[in-house]
Structures are given as structure tokens and as C-alpha cells.
Amino acid sequence: MRVLLVEDAPRLRDIVARRLREEGYATDATGTGMEAVSRALSTRYDAIVLDLRLPDLDGLDACSRLRDAGCWTPILMLTARDGLGDRVDGLDRGADDYMTKPFEFPELFARLRALVRRGQDARPAALVCGDLIVDPAAHTATRAGRDIDLTAKEFALLEYLARHHGAVLSREQLIEAVWDEGYRGDSNLVDVYVRRLRDKIDRPFARESLETVRGVGYRLVKDADPA
Image (tube, rainbow, N blue to C red):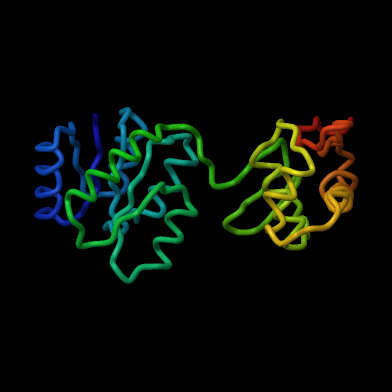
């Protein structure tokens, strides 16, 4: 397995690279974010160990650039112990896992093994269905470049539909995913929220992307632009 290590501190970079190689990883190492992006886009790696604090392009921006370019190599981000906000930002921008410094090498190796098993399936930060874009981290939805004002429950329902776009989801599935286990009401509540969503994401844009599948449930599809 081949790993890209991105760490700007030369001594730490050398130590981590040596331990990775001893563990059997073919390891390339760099100390800058720009070179990391260039290497990751030109070479197929099984995983990237990415330090947050880099001298040119920080780890957050490097992660965003890779994901925007369609590079889905699993990323393990290294952060300071007190950097909770940075860890949250990293995960929201497409990182798959994080470790705080200082760390123990057995844990690093275990996390890398877990990431490699996960593979390189696309995991975009924003959910795109045609010109409808749902951003769970920013909690925003836009269509054709226009912001859509949604309540918290409407957004949760749209996010779940967008994550499974093209799939038919039953009312029971939607209730289980969007409403908590304490909900004991009628599943017709889903119909009410679907109508509200249509009034906000479809009708103002002359779209029909939120479909009813009679007798089964609902699905979100990529709808063509209106004629």
C-alpha cells in the first residue's frame, strides 16, 4: 500500500515516514500543501496523512482542493490536541478521520488500515442532484444558484433524500431517518413535509424532481431544466 505523508516539521516527517515504511507502507513524504495536492492528483495513493498546519496551503484547503478535483483518496488529518474547531472543519471539508498530536504509532497504523479498507468511493461534502445543491455542513440548499429557505426538519428530509437520490424511499424509512424514535404519529406527516419541500425546491423553479412512487414512497431525481 502506498501512502502520502504531508508534514512540515522535517524531524517528525522523517520519523513518521520511517515508521510507516517499517510497517510495510510505500511512503512518499512532503512538507507543503501545494506539493501534496500535486502529488495526490498525479499518483494513486491508498491513503494520505495530512497535517493541518502547513507553511503554504493549510491542510483544510488542501483537502478541499483534492475533493473538488475528484480525488477521493482517504485522508487522515493530524491536528493539535486543542483544535476541536479545526477537526470539525476538516471532517466537513472531506477528511475521513483525524488524529491529535502527539499520537501513538499503533493507533496511526490501525486508523490507516481502517481507511484503506473503506476505499475511494466518492464522499462529496455537498450533495448534488442536477442544479439542486444541499450542503449538510453549511446547512444550506440552493437551486439554480438561488438560496432556498428551509426549516430544520425540511432540511433534514431533503438531505436524506439527496443522500439517496434516485432511490425510492418508503414513508417508514423517512420517518425512521428524519424523526426520532419517540415519534409515534401517522406516517402521513411525511406527505405534509414532501408537499412543503415541493413548494420550495420544485415549483418555484418549474421542476418535478421530488417524485411520488405510488404505493411505495418518494424519490429525488435529477430533473431537466425547464424548456
